[in-house]
Structures are given as structure tokens and as C-alpha cells.
Length: 347
Image (cartoon, rainbow, N blue to C red):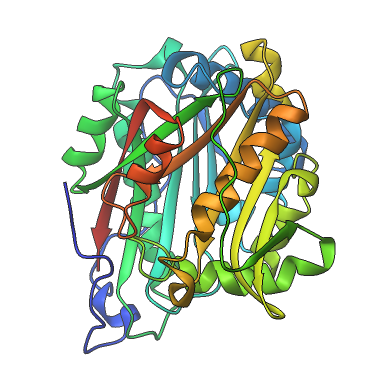
């Protein structure tokens, strides 16, 4: 499954393109007694809810309380307008929706729909009215933009959740791209660390902004990707689970040309009963590709993570990666575990 990396700019402002589209209204469903926005006091409630979704949809990973709190605290998220909770008559949280539109855009104006329906309440049409609200909210976000860039709503569904996929498709979203979740057993023999024609060293806190710019350049030709702002980047490298000691950068002179950033997710480790390290990003600026830098970064990461006591390294890759990253990961001992399908709706 392939698609154009980024849709082309339009002739009229985004606000005009969505002028006739639907707007949000409070959803109506006979099994939902009340709806309200999320507040910062809902962190524990939402963490428990996310764990229930995980048990049904993606049992190999969990969101921690800190991750939920971090999401709700983002300045680009308007809790009053971008979030929704649906409660059953007995007070149980049955549904949760969140619509996030990143503040910066160079290639497209994006909006991401997240959330779901508690497993105890599925199969009753609640997801349909919740998704209708989310898509309408995304349109409202677009309606404030004068940009000529395309407006794109993104949604994701696990391959193993066909009902979720059908829900997105019935709402008019198109399946665009498979993303593969790979895992590498660090207890198996590791590849040798090869030479590369650019120096590789451990990540340092003062590298954050230079690595952000390198990431924005490296991922410019990846499907659905756009720039990350300093604030967004800070949520990644400033997170409690970020492992700068297991992250690497490749430098050519004083310029960062490659990077590998890693995080540890303790909630997932506790659930799985083993210690895994997650590769958030591995990338090389376009000027540095074909020089063996990515292989050198990845091999160095595997040895460092194994030396730190981790039993697995996990990462995600576009099945149609423009850099051929899939073949690299497989050659380094990574194996596909499951898939996620990306959907989009363009304006």
C-alpha cells in the first residue's frame, strides 16, 4: 500500500475549503448518559481507561500516568474544545475522544484523532458518534487556518482490530500506509559495530535543538511527516522515560547529520515483565545518506542497550519507507511483530 508522500498545496485557503463542512454538536447515543470535556483532574481516570483499551487492542504496550498527563498538558490542546468523555448511566467512562492539531506546519495542516470505546461498551454504535464528533472538531480546527497547505486528518488502527478499521473507513477515511512494529531480541548475538565516515558519540542535552533540526530535515520525505516544534520536541527529550544515555548522534564537523533517540516505558515493561528500549527516531539528513551512518547508529544502540540490561529493542517503520529502512532493520536482527494502518482524510 503506497500513497503520495504529501498532498499538493491548494488554490484557496483551508478555512474556505471547509466552510461548508460539518461542525461539532454534542453526540447523542442512548447508552451515554452524559458527555463532557476532559479536565486535568481526569489523569487517573484516563490512565485506567487507556489500560482497558490496551488490554483489548494492543496488549504489548501501556500508557503510563505521566504520558497521559503530558498529553493533556500540551499547549496546542484545548481541553474544553478538543476532548470529550462519554459516561454511561452507572457512571462508568465508556468513551473518550481527543483531537490534536500541531501548531507548526510547513507541508500540511494536520489533525490527529485519538481515543476509543471501552471494551464493555463496544458493538453498540458509540464509536460511530464519537468519531463523527472528532472529525467535525478537526474541521473546526482547520476553519481557523488561512493556509494554502492541504488539511489532513489522520487516524490509526491496529491490523488486529478490524472493527476499528471499518469504523474509520465508513467515516470516509482512506487507508494509506502500513506501519510495522519491529522488535529485536538483545539476548541473541549482536551485529558488529561498523565504521562510518562521520563520528558517532553519545547524545548530550545541549544537542536537543540541533537534533530537532536534523530530524525535521531527515523526515521531510517521509509520508505524513512534518516539522516538530521546539515545544513538541521538548515533550520527547524532556520526558521522564527519555534515555539520553542510550541515544546517539552522528556529527560531521559541528553539524549533526544522524541521530538515534531512545526511551524506556516503564508501564509497558511492568506489564510485559521484561525491559524493552524503544527507538523513537533513527534518521540521517538527506545529505548524509548512503554513508553507513544509520547502520553505525543502530549497531551502537543495540550494544549499549544490551549492556544496560535491556532484553529487547523496539521500533516502528513505514512499510514503504523512502530510505529502505525496513531492510536495514531486518539485517540487524529486527523482526516484525504486528502492524498498524494509517488512515487520512484530506481537505
